[in-house]
Length: 429
Image (cartoon, rainbow, N blue to C red; front, side, top):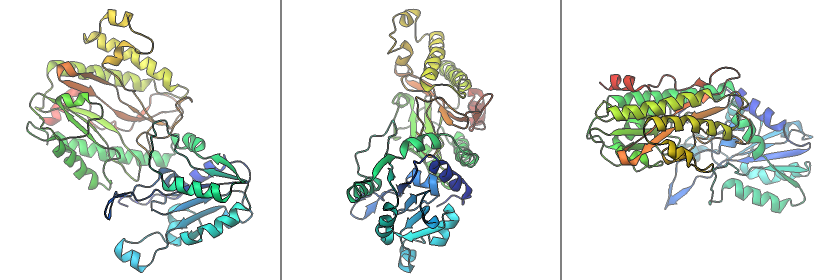
């Protein structure tokens, strides 16, 4: 891993919060992700399953975490099963976790090699009544691939059909959505790396630059600051490409007079940042571009103020829609007749602003969080309104990451990343 070691007190705290929610006499199991094949002997870079990382800090393939807080044997209340390391593996792949380094990483004292898992699990299963399995129930999830977690769950249920089965995910949805101070510091680090990348490209952008060259400049700065790179596929969209919400080709020339929409972020220690900024290819916004830009910025600033404990996500978006409607009227993009004739299910502003304003953020870019429950302090949200005008050849989106506070305005983790149009022009010139 490129990131610096994380104090294991974070993972110890996370496990205590999780096990406090379990039914009596139950255990929970979490698996690492697979290393996914491409073809021949090629594989995708390993990405750890966020749940096992959240609970243990283990960032390695072929690892299993078992939590059994009521286990009669005290040393079996927290167990890690790890891929056994040896000199051959160390030479070809690099060092893997030993039982000692696993304890330093996670604070878990008991570790077995993976080949002992079935024998140890048999003993544990004779002592528990309920097994918590880990399913993916994120509201955006659309998974067709069978995961390592899926295969383990299938084996467990077939091997031990008499046990009661419960779900870990609802517990984790609530726990992971509210961040600890150490987590906020890690997200701040990711945002700080993103800031360095953005400031780097301000002097790089000019007519004739390719979108992928800007992507490369971000990647260069991210890697040299201990990031693996982007936590999601970056969007570098010049001109009319910005009106494609998930444009990821990044293969067009940036032309004089156009704007570039950059929806990018750095990860750090598996934690995400998620930023969107607009820059003019020629270093200056046109009058119309700046007019729309400032309207989007105004909506973003107002939407940020609305994020407070007790707010419901659906109500929040209705209120943001009212602010956006006002701005679109001022820009001449909507008429009063458009507003009078709009339907409740499809308000008029959706013609120019068709996506949501905010989502949870953390270990995943679209992080865990139950949208039907009120917002809480120490939740991290993006704020990302946009106005997209294909007929005028540009679209504008602006995005920051903010932490909800117990009282007062949210804390902006991207407060040091330039966003005012005049400031961006000044830095580019």
